[in-house]
Length: 191
Ligand SMILES: [Zn+2]
Image (cartoon, rainbow, N blue to C red; front, side, top):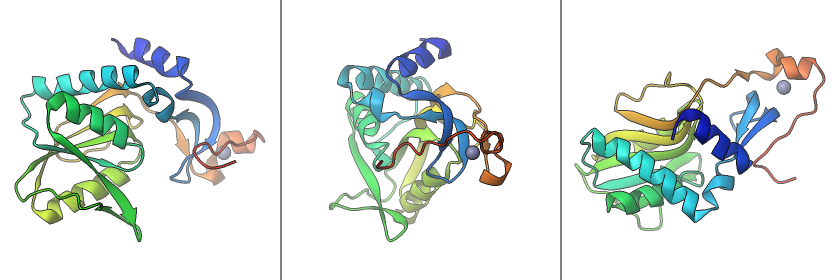
């Protein structure tokens, strides 16, 4: 499946939207990914997980556990855990920190694959990596459905994404869509 076919699949499920959006990072963008709308279909999520897991396997990266940041990464992380036949846990934000809760544990030296739905600035991914490292485990790779940085964000480990392209993000004061007076949508938050 090529990039264009993947984009079509996302668009068909309204998981890829064009407009004027305020992202959770606070930045404004003309593109928004709502991965939940594609991941709500178990058939599609397992198909996408299979593709990502294939990339990990092709690179001979041995994985012992998958860790995803909640909530966006949970479904795809779990599906990838199924394909790789390893357990899948998730990290949640507690007092501003992304931590393992619910009695989830990872062992020292365990080989961890970090799974995200969308990477934009890589901030939450980096936080999860730091949490894993602080436990003494090893991050062996990062995978995501979508990479909005077109590979520019570097985590110092191998990483793969299904959809790679650079999306223009703007600070509010520089946003051309704000300047044009376009109404803004804040998807992902309650209306
Ligand atoms: Zn704007």
